[in-house]
Length: 106
Image 1 (cartoon, rainbow, N blue to C red):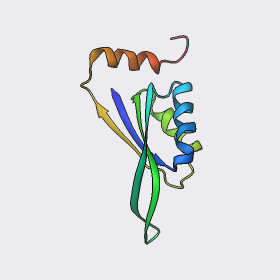
Image 2 (image 1 turned 120 degrees about the vertical axis):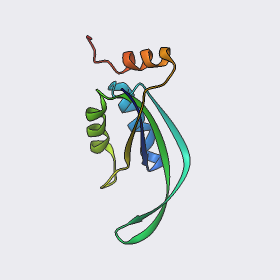
Image 3 (image 1 turned 30 degrees about the vertical axis):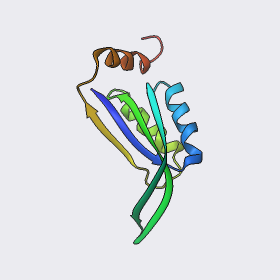
Image 4 (image 1 turned 120 degrees about the horizontal axis):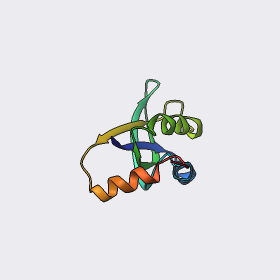
């Protein structure tokens, strides 16, 4: 199974997290989408913040480690980490994603 994982975080932290996930082979690709303005309820109040959205492509096999790594690097107490499975994609993309996230030596 392949996944697209959505994560929002402060703009100044986005590139570091994206590069780490790809360099550690937890993600094959991360799209960094700036200019997100989030409005949300937190601790009884309505808050607004500029954020960056990461679209992370990974596999179900790598997801537990990916989630753990995001938690260690993410500045929020409760980070938004939403994994959306997909089973339809260009076959060549699926093959590339499997290779890009494979552990070294496999």
